[in-house]
Length: 201
Figure 1: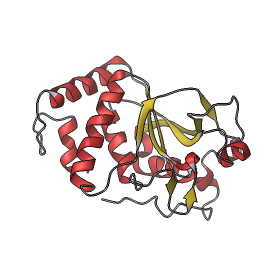
Figure 2: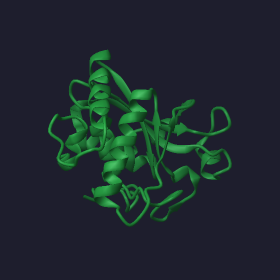
Figure 3: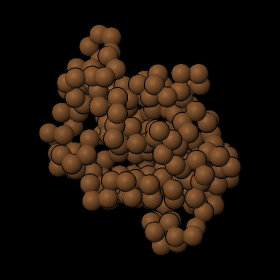
């Protein structure tokens, strides 16, 4: 499934790196996998209903849990209405709890790039605003290193003529979204889905 991006966590890369970056990524993935039976990842890539739904559908029981919420903003306890104005600078995001022995962080990052158009800045399809920006919010230096390696490969392999707009930054305060947003598309199968939330490659 991961195609050439298996080079992030296998010993036989399909796309070679220059220098020690591959070894660094492998070591980082191993450190993450051995440190705990539960880890966390945070992604933003458009309307969080579709983001959560696609992660749950694709990884199924390999995820422990997923929550939608708000991150990267400048006020406490934002409401959905406030975030939608764009004035709080929060991103609609998903917080994923996963078992690193069942799915690697690199695999989650790769899926983040596959499931939306990462070259769109502050929007996904018809959803426009900073709350719909593409972002990876990392919780450790190891996660940041892996995210940057995966993004570099995705840039070269899939978007050679367009710059990826995804921002990789340390995770800040997380706020769970209101209850009715959680598993929204599971509970409302005919609800709105961003047209950019498809597997692009």
